[in-house]
Length: 426
Image (cartoon, rainbow, N blue to C red; front, side):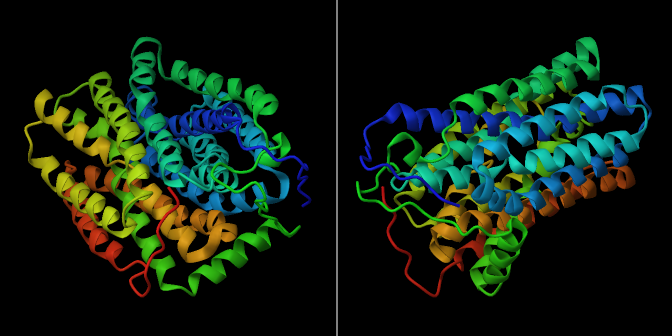
């Protein structure tokens, strides 16, 4: 793929960088809201259509699984065909598949639309998109920008929930589906007309780069081959498996468990859908601050010890959750604490990936690591539903997830332990 590099490369047009980050943020925000929508639909579909909670959970788990599997291939396709084309295609797929689900009456239709099709679509509008944009447009402050973009994936999944829950409560589940489709399709023309592909297209170099910065060049290679080659290369390194395992736990303890089942957990304690979604929205707001701050810290501190802190604190909070009284005060404290730590793991994980695998391969390898995140989320989404039906309680699932978080904290210390990590460019 040829990249045009103009002769006079400028570095002082901050509005272009703000535009790129803003459109990427909004795309990730809406995509994450789409991925979280099955959590809002779970109770209404169970009540109005008579579907079992386990069947809905399994469909949601398939969507989460595909969301992760598509990531590394999406990153390779972005290198070949461009970010803008991939993003437009993914947004159209998400919006149209949501519209198709409006007339569903059988669980297999939910599986097809909200499991398979939106899984493929949201997989292209995921953290690999943020990683690709950050590596292409920034040299300095990568941790901070990735923290901001990563925050959008959790904030979107949580921020839209109260509004969607209110729509479901007032007008039925179809109203929430129509709102999700509209938000997705509105983004298509904005991306098509205003998102530049490369800094060089606007006569720029990446933020923080020298004026003679040489842009990354990608081989005109089959995307499938590119993604598989990156996986084979990464799998030979111990750091990949440590990053994969810790991110598995990240997904297990966030999107899969709390993101998918928190409203149902609250329902078991007599708390309605709308107030429960409000607590999730509060987590999303605090995540925006927590993950952005985590990015700032990643630009300055050892990423391994940041991960140790995040996973350890998350594990302890999950172990404590089933033993609280579920009063408004207790849930508010839990929501603030869990929100600050929701996806703060992303900036240090991407930094460790860049160090271990290089800037060229890191977005694709990071996609495979994110796949581990979504495998963990899919496992939690389905396992929690099955355990709830079998035991009538989420207690064992929450304790299990908390113990997994503590284990991930100690695994994180061993990432890159055989070498000294370079100091980030801040």
